[in-house]
Length: 343
Image (cartoon, rainbow, N blue to C red):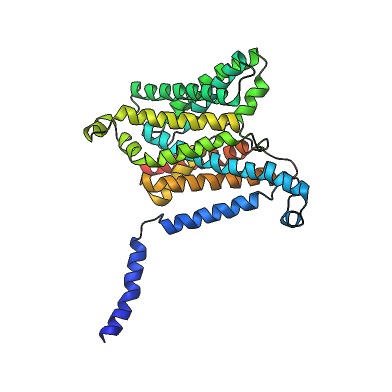
């Protein structure tokens, strides 16, 4: 009888344990990572050039050259950029204490583009690393200006915060466009403002490994960013150096934005949409959310890149355009959802 009772209780206990198991567990994360890896492998065989598994197995040298010179670097770039920009958006939201901001809506990307324009005009033959460094400095200044404006303006409605950032970014973008027009660099400017992976080749994407390191740093500092997001007074009372943490976040966001803009171009809405979707699915535990944000970001950009390569085959739509179209719709859905929750 006792054995029968225990047998009957075991499924019930297992069911209760399954209900109480936290969302976003390690097993689920591994499964999601495996799915993204499978999607990345599929993306390597999508494109105009004939790079198929039979051709590779048959030893087609042309197929192998395209595979190693173009397809593999492109896929790695997509994954790294998607992960890094999504995590940068999460950090930006913690720093600004607002879920509707990200580097492309607070003037960070526009400031990085202005920095690239300045160094292009001043030193036309500057190396890629020099452009990245100058862009990072300008991105940090632009982000710092946004945070300073937020402290000066009493914003009671959280929806006004991204509007302030968009207006600030618009002002910076207008200045950049004016000088690009004066120096006949509008076409070059457009290439920075539209994210596109079609030009990624071996030897031209390696700077993106920097953002992989910055993503890991963002994960290690996740708890500190969480406390800093609660305000300066609260974090200081807990014995944390608020200004140091904010400066760390500023450097991470600025460097990620600069590297991606220099290497790929701007990919708007990514850092806004992915953290919000992860928050809706798994809650607001930042330490647990960062890996999911990175995985979701990589998968989202991979999917958009494949859509851009197939929707008008054999022509290609830049991934920045696809992400903008999908991201703007999701952004509006998030805004409407926020308004409905407020009643």
